[in-house]
Amino acid sequence: MTQAAQNIGTAGAGQATAGQVTPGMALLLQFRTLVALALVIGIFAVLAPNFLTLANALIMLKHIAIIAILAIGMTFVILTGGIDLSVGSVAGLAGMVAGALILNGLPLTALGYVIYPSVPLVVGMVLVLGVGLGLFNGLLVTRFQVAPFIATLGTLYIARGAAMLMSDGATFPNLVGSADLGNLGFGWLGAGRMLGVPVPVWILAGLAAAAAWVAGATTFGRRVYAVGGSERAALLSGVRVPRIKYAVYAISGGMAALVGMLVASDLVAAHPASGESFELSAIAAVVLGGTSLAGGRGTIGGTLIGACVIGVLGDGMVMVGISEFWQMVIKGAVIIAAVVLDRLQERLG
Image (cartoon, rainbow, N blue to C red):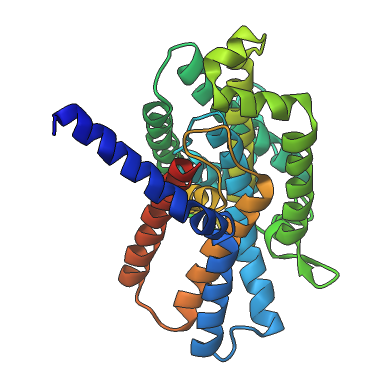
């Protein structure tokens, strides 16, 4: 038998095998995140008696909200075929900037006095910073044609270094504000509750609803999917691809800044190392939720379920006493498994 004939025979056998396993595999892959979530909850419910209590559920929801908010921004970026590795560092820098504004105010050297912004103004200023860093990523990716991985890796180091420089690596403590300065209330953002539910969970609910609507029911959302599906086809159909990329990176930067403030608010302190490895959890949540790393396929709802898996897994491992070193190993394995399953789903069509 000739080599060509062998190749044809092998291809035919591969197609037959794929046809035999596709229905079951496709069904399992379609609901893999829900299956994983059910398994994780079931395992830790058995291993940790207090795992399913209301108090613990509320704590887990707050932790899940942090991951999910980051992951929502990351979803838009990945849907276009990009990646944003800078979100953890942007979150750390955002927390430090918020802390500096509350503790030290905004010095106006030329005028000889210091302005202490109110908490809503602090939030607005930090969000603008996050969006600005996202636009910087978009500039690198679109105008200078830098690969998203490299562009956002560079921003990761810039943001982390800037956070360290702000305090020489020290923490900004006691971010409670002062009544005399009119900047009380920062702690409520991350640690407060409404109707017994943590504020970050309410924030997530609003952002998730808005993001799902934008992705699924607006022209912008359709263009995001189009860019990820085929950038060239999107260009030929009149989509302004650079603008879409600017927008998704700006969204990601804004979400990262919000997360940084939520973490600093919850701790009532800002540390420059805050947010380390957050980007990995966000990417894992997005891919576990069914968004393709190649772009063009995924949903906000899937991302939320993926964030639940990552959040429940992290809290569950802490509750059963798994060492921090093993937690890193397990989370790394989950990320690899998520990517492998994503590639498998693409192959099975």
